Length: 255
Ligand code: NAD
Ligand code: IMJ
View 1 (cartoon, helix red, strand yellow):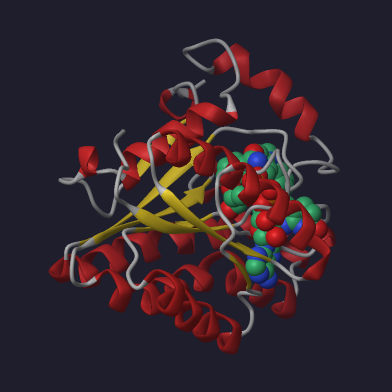
View 2: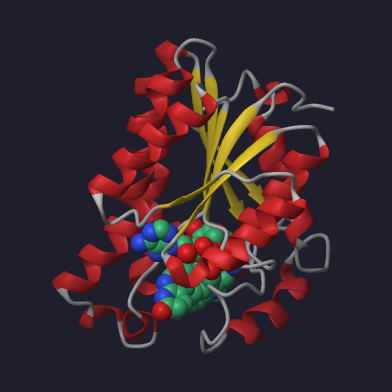
């Protein structure tokens, strides 16, 4: 029971396939008390059901493009939970046409949206979570992807946003370390979630990964859940500002 007596907030559950759901399952298995955010009424029922299965009734609506939603979220969390030991950020979005067209056609607005939702939001939620963590320290984990550092066909502006996210992890870690708050990213291999479905070429990438990855297979979502659990638990207490690859070793291979 690695997380006995610990409580935290999970942002980014859309449905049962979500990486945030797998992380929440790992945290629940180890005894953590969980609260969840959902993005708008469309997803409330899904998240309510998932939270219920993981012993939680604590749900908050939060659209990370709205500063007032983020502020209200942590005011409510403070009322309901008092303090936070951990925070999971598993949120990304870019306009679909920016993931399909040539990268050089990315519009100013498309660039802004991808960076606002996929990178700035980590800064926004970390800033508001920090005062709730300061007394005991805390751990924040976000999700990244290899497209942050190497060109992956179609990942386009999301790759640039993930590069910004990973740099933000380092700057947040440097800033919040004085309060014993750690900030890390888990860089997951391709997983068939809502955020991957309908992406042209995604199936091809899933099919090609086992040929190159040292473990000769794709990563399973529960493996990402357990790695995030490690980063959120005291087992990783000496680690901050890091990007941990959970990709069956894919990123270490040149060709
Ligand atoms: P998902 O679709 O289940 O999760 C994405 C979440 O982002 C959803 O819950 C959605 O509601 C939320 N979101 C989008 N815009 C938002 C907004 N404005 N406000 C609040 N929430 C918003 O897909 P997933 O694959 O579980 O994605 C979770 C994270 O994992 C993302 O950061 C993604 O980039 C990352 N990731 C995914 C893969 C993959 O192959 N699926 C690989 C590596 C990293
Ligand atoms: C996404 C696009 C292109 C290639 C991709 C992906 N590969 C992988 C993903 C190879 C693994 C999934 N991924 C890592 C993401 O971060 C996805 C983010 C995303 C997905 C969508 C789809 C629907 C939509 N906007 C999106 N914005 C971000 O409209």
